[in-house]
Length: 521
Image (cartoon, rainbow, N blue to C red):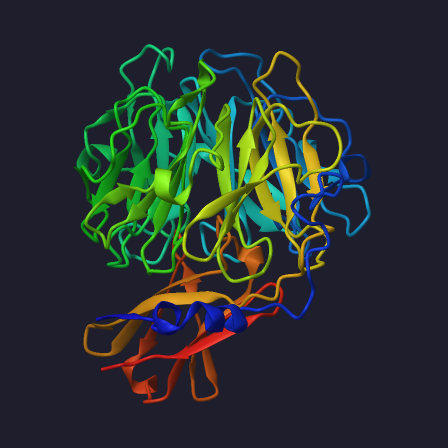
């Protein structure tokens, strides 16, 4: 049975504001003051010179020192191979200290057409592992963590021998066997602007980070023409991971539904729009279902085919996605540029998700949620020089001040410019409690109980560094929960240890805590 945390659905808005209210700290810079900025450019302080074609950035603690490190996935070009480049790695040395480059220590002399790099513990040894998603029909790579920031390349023994054009990849436990599998967007051989596309790949983990390709037996045969992004999300709130796949050259993007065992079926639940670069899932209106912001698949703006508005799709209680862009994100707020990616954050710590939108042709900008899923535009949020080639931005608290900082990857331009770091000096500290939107309790066999829950902090994606702990509390005993994709967490507990008084708790990185009582029937 699935239980929704009713306090987020029934409380008046004023009480919700009090529930999630901050400690009195206010944003100093008012929206009409374009001389003040929320994030301050401190690139020169933290990073050495960079000037590669950067497709994506990953922020993760690579060496276990509780500081967030950075990996830049490098290698162009847009629709045909450019110059192979080093994907650069930088270790955080603490507040106000320059990052230390360790690219050679991790990747050696290897260079890539890296469209994406992701970090997670894939073999459950407590150390982060690195996956490099390569494009232009190249082998993707895996580097297994050995602790203390040491990594060993294990591609030949741990990855399928497949040449692919990977546009994105994500981790998640698709078959509920307790380990993280990988899905990969693949646009196939040849030019991504002219070919027939490629099949979305699924690689299953054996628990030791040895992956098997099961695409032919478990994934739809549908070819996707130029996919830049895919995401795990639980569309229907049944606690298994479904997949959404963006498509630039198709008539619509796709939703693949999971049968709970890792077998996926192509279903039509989207409004039909072409030219989608990216999705980002989040419950923007607090109804317990994940909605989507899409990128660059809307109306052409200013007669330039590359400049388009975005869309907001609300999840209609798992029946379909509904386009509410004109009502919830009107044109004067949804101005449209050659935009590329979206990340959610609660920038003002008021308990609802806002988001940042990156752009190649205009300002990177902030969209502010009114708490009901209606968004208003705020520009001039970043100090320093313009950021004209932003292909990727990620969020991380680089200096442990309980404020989200911005790390940008710059690429796809006639002039290659540096990556950027903007510190969140003028946003409030995080004082908003995590959200436990709903949970599910199932019996497993005769002697175990499985508890699953969606828990998030209004930030995307959910990363290990975002949490102090997520656990089930029974009496005085804590049972840690494991993240298994999207914003989903799970744990199995022996039936003999279950009592009537059970709580589900989460504590975010800033120390904000939410606990709810849960029912076990």
